[in-house]
Image 1 (cartoon, rainbow, N blue to C red):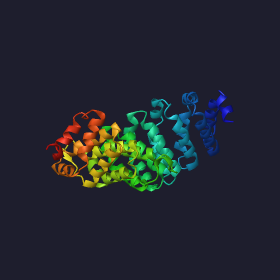
Image 2: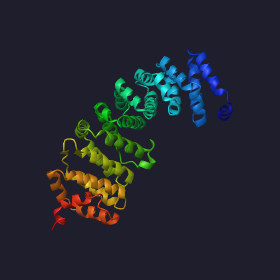
Image 3: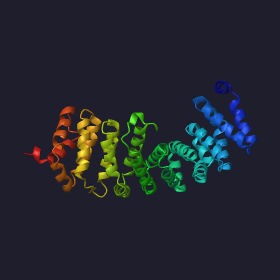
Image 4: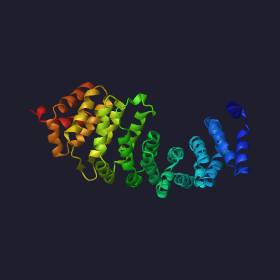
Length: 355
C-alpha cells in the first residue's frame, strides 16, 4: 500500500484537498498526517508536499485540534519529516513557533506529544536563528525543561530535550536565558541515567549519543559566567567525572567530557578558575592513561590541565599527583607535539621536571 501511494503522483494533492474539505474530522486529519509522514520520508515527495501546502495544513490542524493528543502526536510525527524541507517564509507566515508552543503547553502529560513536539522544535531551530529567538521569547525553553523534569525516567525525553537546548544555545545572546531553565534538568537527567550499563547494548537506545549530546549542551551553555556558576552549583563537575569513571573506556565520550570540564573550570571573562579536588585530577589522569594513543583525548585533557594551572591552589594539587607529569610527557612523545605549547605550560609548574 505504501509503495502504491508513493507512486501515485496525484495522491499529495488529494490528501491536502481532503484535509481542507473536512477540517473538523479527527479521523480524516489524523489519517492524512499518517500518510504524509510516510510519504515525506522520500526527499522528492517531501518537497512536493511542502510545495502543495501540506506543511501549512498540518500546522493548521495542530492549531485547531491542539487538545486531541492522538491527532497532535500524528501531526508532530509528520512535521518531523517536513520542517527541514519547508520554506522558512511559509513557516514564519504560519506562526509555527507559536502553534508548536501552544500545543506542547496544552498537553503536558502526554509523553508522546512532549517527545515528538520537542523533536519538531529542534528541526525548526535548525532552519534559522529567527526561530531560536522566537521560541525563547515565547518560553519554549521553560516548557522543554518542565517536560524533562516531568518525564525524568524517559531516556528519550532527556535526549530530545538536550538536543534542542543545545541548538538554541548556540546563539550567544540566548545562553543565559536558556541556562536559567535548562541547567538543572540537564544535570538531573544525566544523574538519573548515569549507570554502569554497557553503552552500546543499552535497551533504551544509544545511551552514548545521549551522554555526548547532553554534555555537548553543557559545553555550549557554560561559556558564560552565569551558566558556569550554575553548573558548579548543580554538581556538574562531579557528575561529569562520574561519567568518566563509569565509561572511561569510551574515547568519544571522554573527549566531550573533558571539553566540558575545561569550559566549566575556566572563566576568561572574570579570570576565575575553579578549584578542583584530587579526585577530579585522578579521573583526568585515568582517562589519559587509558587513551594514551588517542590524540583528541590527550589534547582535551592537556587543555583542561593547562586551564587549571592558572590557580595556585590547583597547581599544588597537580604537583602532588605522580601521574600527571609522565602522562603529559608521554603524550608529547607519542604525537611529537607540545599541543600548541599547552603541554609545556603544564610541565612548567611540575617540580619533578624542573629538577
